[in-house]
Length: 271
Ligand SMILES: Cc1cc2nc3c(=O)[nH]c(=O)nc-3n(C[C@H](O)[C@H](O)[C@H](O)COP(=O)(O)OP(=O)(O)OC[C@H]3O[C@@H](n4cnc5c(N)ncnc54)[C@H](O)[C@@H]3O)c2cc1C
Image (tube, rainbow, N blue to C red):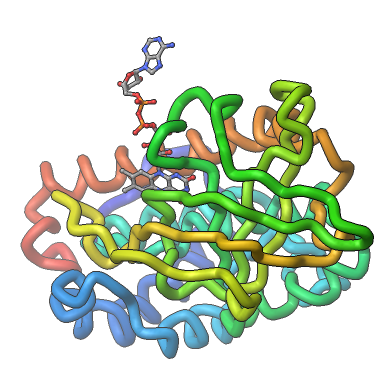
Protein backbone atom coordinates (compact mmCIF):
# COMPACT_ATOMS: atom_id res chain seq x y z
CA UNK A 1 0.00 0.00 0.00
CA UNK A 2 1.11 3.56 -0.65
CA UNK A 3 2.38 4.99 2.63
CA UNK A 4 0.27 8.05 3.46
CA UNK A 5 1.38 8.25 7.12
CA UNK A 6 2.98 11.29 8.71
CA UNK A 7 0.16 13.67 7.89
CA UNK A 8 -2.02 15.24 10.55
CA UNK A 9 -4.91 16.28 8.32
CA UNK A 10 -6.75 13.01 8.76
CA UNK A 11 -8.19 11.23 11.79
CA UNK A 12 -8.34 7.49 12.39
CA UNK A 13 -11.94 7.56 11.09
CA UNK A 14 -10.75 9.19 7.87
CA UNK A 15 -8.08 6.50 7.44
CA UNK A 16 -10.63 3.76 8.04
CA UNK A 17 -12.75 5.32 5.29
CA UNK A 18 -9.65 5.32 3.06
CA UNK A 19 -9.48 1.54 3.43
CA UNK A 20 -13.09 1.26 2.23
CA UNK A 21 -12.28 3.47 -0.76
CA UNK A 22 -9.15 1.49 -1.63
CA UNK A 23 -10.94 -1.83 -1.47
CA UNK A 24 -13.74 -0.60 -3.71
CA UNK A 25 -11.33 0.95 -6.22
CA UNK A 26 -9.15 -2.17 -6.30
CA UNK A 27 -12.21 -4.28 -7.04
CA UNK A 28 -14.34 -2.03 -9.25
CA UNK A 29 -12.02 0.57 -10.77
CA UNK A 30 -8.55 -0.81 -11.41
CA UNK A 31 -9.74 -3.70 -13.65
CA UNK A 32 -11.65 -1.19 -15.83
CA UNK A 33 -9.14 1.66 -15.79
CA UNK A 34 -7.57 1.18 -19.22
CA UNK A 35 -10.92 0.61 -20.92
CA UNK A 36 -12.46 3.77 -19.39
CA UNK A 37 -9.44 5.89 -20.30
CA UNK A 38 -9.69 4.51 -23.84
CA UNK A 39 -13.47 5.00 -24.13
CA UNK A 40 -13.32 8.49 -22.59
CA UNK A 41 -16.06 7.76 -20.06
CA UNK A 42 -16.72 5.73 -16.92
CA UNK A 43 -19.51 3.11 -16.71
CA UNK A 44 -22.57 4.41 -14.86
CA UNK A 45 -22.57 1.19 -12.87
CA UNK A 46 -19.33 2.32 -11.20
CA UNK A 47 -21.07 5.50 -10.00
CA UNK A 48 -23.78 3.37 -8.42
CA UNK A 49 -21.20 1.20 -6.67
CA UNK A 50 -19.44 4.31 -5.33
CA UNK A 51 -22.80 5.64 -4.12
CA UNK A 52 -23.64 2.39 -2.39
CA UNK A 53 -20.31 2.48 -0.52
CA UNK A 54 -20.80 6.11 0.63
CA UNK A 55 -18.10 7.60 -1.62
CA UNK A 56 -20.30 10.17 -3.38
CA UNK A 57 -21.08 13.50 -1.71
CA UNK A 58 -20.26 12.32 1.85
CA UNK A 59 -20.70 15.93 3.04
CA UNK A 60 -24.41 16.02 2.15
CA UNK A 61 -26.57 16.28 5.30
CA UNK A 62 -28.29 13.12 6.45
CA UNK A 63 -31.80 14.44 5.71
CA UNK A 64 -30.86 14.39 2.00
CA UNK A 65 -29.39 10.89 2.11
CA UNK A 66 -25.77 11.85 2.79
CA UNK A 67 -23.47 11.10 5.71
CA UNK A 68 -23.00 14.70 6.90
CA UNK A 69 -19.21 14.28 6.98
CA UNK A 70 -16.42 16.85 6.60
CA UNK A 71 -14.48 17.69 3.44
CA UNK A 72 -11.64 15.36 4.49
CA UNK A 73 -13.72 12.37 3.36
CA UNK A 74 -14.16 13.84 -0.11
CA UNK A 75 -10.43 14.61 -0.19
CA UNK A 76 -9.66 10.95 0.54
CA UNK A 77 -11.80 9.81 -2.39
CA UNK A 78 -9.97 12.34 -4.60
CA UNK A 79 -6.54 11.15 -3.45
CA UNK A 80 -7.33 7.49 -3.89
CA UNK A 81 -8.86 8.12 -7.30
CA UNK A 82 -5.70 9.83 -8.53
CA UNK A 83 -3.37 7.36 -6.79
CA UNK A 84 -5.19 4.62 -8.69
CA UNK A 85 -4.51 6.40 -12.00
CA UNK A 86 -8.15 7.20 -12.74
CA UNK A 87 -9.46 10.54 -13.99
CA UNK A 88 -13.18 9.84 -13.45
CA UNK A 89 -15.29 12.94 -12.74
CA UNK A 90 -16.22 12.01 -9.16
CA UNK A 91 -14.53 15.11 -7.65
CA UNK A 92 -16.51 17.41 -9.94
CA UNK A 93 -19.74 15.78 -8.76
CA UNK A 94 -18.89 15.66 -5.03
CA UNK A 95 -16.52 18.55 -4.33
CA UNK A 96 -17.83 21.09 -6.81
CA UNK A 97 -21.41 20.57 -7.97
CA UNK A 98 -23.08 19.20 -4.82
CA UNK A 99 -22.37 22.17 -2.55
CA UNK A 100 -24.20 24.61 -4.83
CA UNK A 101 -27.31 22.58 -4.05
CA UNK A 102 -26.49 22.08 -0.36
CA UNK A 103 -25.69 25.75 0.26
CA UNK A 104 -28.13 27.64 -1.97
CA UNK A 105 -30.87 25.52 -3.56
CA UNK A 106 -34.51 25.46 -2.54
CA UNK A 107 -35.77 22.63 -0.35
CA UNK A 108 -37.59 21.24 -3.38
CA UNK A 109 -34.41 21.03 -5.49
CA UNK A 110 -32.43 19.58 -2.61
CA UNK A 111 -35.03 16.86 -2.03
CA UNK A 112 -35.26 16.13 -5.74
CA UNK A 113 -31.55 15.79 -6.49
CA UNK A 114 -29.27 15.39 -3.47
CA UNK A 115 -30.37 11.84 -2.53
CA UNK A 116 -29.84 10.73 -6.14
CA UNK A 117 -26.43 12.42 -6.28
CA UNK A 118 -25.45 10.56 -3.11
CA UNK A 119 -26.61 7.21 -4.51
CA UNK A 120 -25.05 7.78 -7.94
CA UNK A 121 -28.42 7.58 -9.70
CA UNK A 122 -27.92 11.20 -10.80
CA UNK A 123 -24.59 12.51 -12.06
CA UNK A 124 -23.99 16.27 -11.91
CA UNK A 125 -22.03 18.72 -14.04
CA UNK A 126 -21.46 22.44 -13.76
CA UNK A 127 -21.31 24.47 -16.97
CA UNK A 128 -19.40 27.72 -16.61
CA UNK A 129 -16.90 27.73 -19.45
CA UNK A 130 -17.89 28.79 -22.97
CA UNK A 131 -15.93 28.98 -26.22
CA UNK A 132 -15.46 32.73 -25.48
CA UNK A 133 -15.42 32.77 -21.66
CA UNK A 134 -13.02 30.92 -19.36
CA UNK A 135 -11.23 32.62 -16.48
CA UNK A 136 -13.38 35.73 -16.84
CA UNK A 137 -16.78 34.31 -15.94
CA UNK A 138 -18.47 37.69 -16.25
CA UNK A 139 -18.06 37.20 -20.00
CA UNK A 140 -20.50 34.29 -20.29
CA UNK A 141 -23.01 34.73 -23.10
CA UNK A 142 -25.43 31.91 -22.38
CA UNK A 143 -28.74 33.62 -21.62
CA UNK A 144 -31.75 32.66 -19.52
CA UNK A 145 -34.66 34.88 -20.52
CA UNK A 146 -37.76 35.02 -18.32
CA UNK A 147 -40.97 33.94 -20.04
CA UNK A 148 -43.77 33.78 -17.48
CA UNK A 149 -42.86 31.12 -14.94
CA UNK A 150 -40.06 29.74 -17.09
CA UNK A 151 -36.56 30.58 -18.24
CA UNK A 152 -35.67 30.04 -21.87
CA UNK A 153 -31.98 29.15 -22.08
CA UNK A 154 -29.79 29.62 -25.16
CA UNK A 155 -26.05 29.23 -25.52
CA UNK A 156 -23.18 26.79 -25.60
CA UNK A 157 -20.63 25.51 -23.11
CA UNK A 158 -17.37 23.66 -23.51
CA UNK A 159 -14.89 21.63 -21.40
CA UNK A 160 -17.71 20.39 -19.18
CA UNK A 161 -16.61 17.47 -17.00
CA UNK A 162 -19.20 14.65 -16.82
CA UNK A 163 -20.82 16.23 -19.89
CA UNK A 164 -21.83 12.92 -21.47
CA UNK A 165 -22.97 11.20 -18.28
CA UNK A 166 -24.65 14.15 -16.57
CA UNK A 167 -28.31 13.94 -15.56
CA UNK A 168 -28.32 17.50 -14.24
CA UNK A 169 -26.26 20.49 -15.27
CA UNK A 170 -25.82 23.63 -13.18
CA UNK A 171 -25.74 26.25 -15.92
CA UNK A 172 -24.10 29.64 -15.43
CA UNK A 173 -26.30 32.01 -17.44
CA UNK A 174 -27.08 35.68 -17.79
CA UNK A 175 -30.59 36.40 -16.53
CA UNK A 176 -29.98 40.13 -17.06
CA UNK A 177 -27.23 40.93 -19.57
CA UNK A 178 -27.31 44.64 -18.60
CA UNK A 179 -26.16 44.02 -15.01
CA UNK A 180 -22.70 42.45 -15.50
CA UNK A 181 -21.80 40.11 -12.64
CA UNK A 182 -25.09 40.90 -10.90
CA UNK A 183 -27.00 39.58 -13.90
CA UNK A 184 -25.57 36.05 -13.58
CA UNK A 185 -27.66 33.19 -12.16
CA UNK A 186 -27.19 29.46 -11.65
CA UNK A 187 -29.94 27.40 -13.22
CA UNK A 188 -30.40 23.66 -12.89
CA UNK A 189 -31.13 22.02 -16.22
CA UNK A 190 -32.23 18.39 -16.33
CA UNK A 191 -30.60 16.54 -19.22
CA UNK A 192 -33.95 15.33 -20.57
CA UNK A 193 -35.21 18.87 -21.26
CA UNK A 194 -36.09 19.53 -24.89
CA UNK A 195 -33.43 21.62 -26.63
CA UNK A 196 -30.55 20.34 -24.49
CA UNK A 197 -27.90 18.60 -26.59
CA UNK A 198 -24.57 17.03 -25.80
CA UNK A 199 -21.77 17.77 -28.22
CA UNK A 200 -18.40 16.08 -28.64
CA UNK A 201 -16.67 14.25 -25.83
CA UNK A 202 -13.42 16.20 -26.22
CA UNK A 203 -10.17 14.48 -27.08
CA UNK A 204 -7.72 15.81 -24.48
CA UNK A 205 -4.07 15.20 -23.58
CA UNK A 206 -5.10 13.86 -20.15
CA UNK A 207 -8.07 13.12 -17.88
CA UNK A 208 -9.43 10.93 -20.64
CA UNK A 209 -12.22 9.20 -18.74
CA UNK A 210 -13.71 12.45 -17.38
CA UNK A 211 -16.05 12.81 -20.44
CA UNK A 212 -15.22 16.52 -20.82
CA UNK A 213 -17.74 17.76 -23.35
CA UNK A 214 -19.45 20.47 -25.30
CA UNK A 215 -23.06 21.22 -24.33
CA UNK A 216 -25.68 23.13 -26.32
CA UNK A 217 -28.88 24.85 -25.18
CA UNK A 218 -31.47 25.77 -27.80
CA UNK A 219 -34.60 27.36 -26.33
CA UNK A 220 -34.41 25.05 -23.32
CA UNK A 221 -37.38 25.84 -21.07
CA UNK A 222 -37.08 25.24 -17.35
CA UNK A 223 -39.34 26.47 -14.53
CA UNK A 224 -38.06 29.50 -12.62
CA UNK A 225 -37.98 27.28 -9.54
CA UNK A 226 -34.90 25.65 -11.14
CA UNK A 227 -32.90 28.79 -10.29
CA UNK A 228 -30.39 27.80 -7.58
CA UNK A 229 -30.67 30.40 -4.82
CA UNK A 230 -31.56 33.96 -5.76
CA UNK A 231 -31.66 35.24 -9.31
CA UNK A 232 -28.66 37.50 -9.97
CA UNK A 233 -26.56 35.98 -7.17
CA UNK A 234 -24.85 33.34 -9.30
CA UNK A 235 -21.54 35.15 -9.58
CA UNK A 236 -21.36 35.64 -5.80
CA UNK A 237 -22.11 31.93 -5.30
CA UNK A 238 -19.34 31.01 -7.74
CA UNK A 239 -16.85 33.23 -5.92
CA UNK A 240 -17.82 31.53 -2.64
CA UNK A 241 -17.46 27.99 -4.02
CA UNK A 242 -14.49 28.30 -6.39
CA UNK A 243 -11.91 28.13 -3.54
CA UNK A 244 -13.16 24.61 -2.72
CA UNK A 245 -12.95 23.72 -6.42
CA UNK A 246 -9.34 24.94 -6.47
CA UNK A 247 -8.60 22.95 -3.31
CA UNK A 248 -10.03 19.83 -4.96
CA UNK A 249 -7.89 20.39 -8.07
CA UNK A 250 -4.81 20.93 -5.88
CA UNK A 251 -5.49 17.69 -3.96
CA UNK A 252 -5.75 15.84 -7.26
CA UNK A 253 -2.57 17.45 -8.62
CA UNK A 254 -0.63 16.60 -5.46
CA UNK A 255 -1.88 13.01 -5.53
CA UNK A 256 -1.08 12.40 -9.17
CA UNK A 257 2.39 13.95 -8.71
CA UNK A 258 2.95 11.59 -5.83
CA UNK A 259 1.80 8.64 -7.90
CA UNK A 260 4.11 9.56 -10.76
CA UNK A 261 7.11 9.98 -8.45
CA UNK A 262 6.48 6.74 -6.66
CA UNK A 263 6.96 3.11 -7.65
CA UNK A 264 3.24 2.86 -6.89
CA UNK A 265 2.76 4.56 -10.19
CA UNK A 266 3.28 1.23 -11.84
CA UNK A 267 1.79 -0.97 -9.16
CA UNK A 268 -1.38 0.04 -7.38
CA UNK A 269 -0.71 -1.78 -4.12
CA UNK A 270 2.83 -0.41 -3.88
CA UNK A 271 4.61 -3.72 -3.41
C1 LIG B 1 -9.92 18.82 -18.14
C2 LIG B 1 -10.76 20.04 -17.98
C3 LIG B 1 -11.97 19.97 -17.32
C4 LIG B 1 -12.78 21.11 -17.20
N1 LIG B 1 -14.00 21.00 -16.57
C5 LIG B 1 -14.82 22.09 -16.54
C6 LIG B 1 -16.14 21.98 -16.00
O1 LIG B 1 -16.56 20.92 -15.51
N2 LIG B 1 -16.93 23.08 -16.03
C7 LIG B 1 -16.51 24.27 -16.54
O2 LIG B 1 -17.28 25.21 -16.53
N3 LIG B 1 -15.26 24.39 -17.07
C8 LIG B 1 -14.40 23.34 -17.07
N4 LIG B 1 -13.14 23.46 -17.60
C9 LIG B 1 -12.72 24.74 -18.14
C10 LIG B 1 -11.78 25.49 -17.22
O3 LIG B 1 -12.47 25.95 -16.09
C11 LIG B 1 -11.20 26.64 -18.07
O4 LIG B 1 -10.27 26.05 -18.94
C12 LIG B 1 -10.56 27.69 -17.22
O5 LIG B 1 -11.55 28.43 -16.56
C13 LIG B 1 -9.68 28.65 -18.05
O6 LIG B 1 -10.41 29.17 -19.11
P1 LIG B 1 -9.80 29.14 -20.60
O7 LIG B 1 -9.38 27.74 -20.93
O8 LIG B 1 -10.80 29.82 -21.50
O9 LIG B 1 -8.49 30.00 -20.52
P2 LIG B 1 -8.37 31.58 -20.54
O10 LIG B 1 -9.33 32.21 -19.61
O11 LIG B 1 -8.39 32.04 -21.98
O12 LIG B 1 -6.91 31.78 -19.95
C14 LIG B 1 -5.74 31.42 -20.74
C15 LIG B 1 -4.52 31.79 -19.92
O13 LIG B 1 -4.51 33.22 -19.66
C16 LIG B 1 -4.43 33.46 -18.25
N5 LIG B 1 -5.27 34.62 -17.93
C17 LIG B 1 -6.59 34.75 -18.18
N6 LIG B 1 -7.02 35.95 -17.75
C18 LIG B 1 -5.95 36.58 -17.22
C19 LIG B 1 -5.76 37.86 -16.63
N7 LIG B 1 -6.76 38.72 -16.47
N8 LIG B 1 -4.52 38.17 -16.19
C20 LIG B 1 -3.49 37.31 -16.35
N9 LIG B 1 -3.61 36.10 -16.90
C21 LIG B 1 -4.82 35.73 -17.34
C22 LIG B 1 -4.94 32.18 -17.59
O14 LIG B 1 -4.41 32.00 -16.28
C23 LIG B 1 -4.45 31.11 -18.55
O15 LIG B 1 -3.11 30.78 -18.28
C24 LIG B 1 -12.32 22.35 -17.72
C25 LIG B 1 -11.08 22.43 -18.38
C26 LIG B 1 -10.32 21.30 -18.51
C27 LIG B 1 -9.00 21.42 -19.23
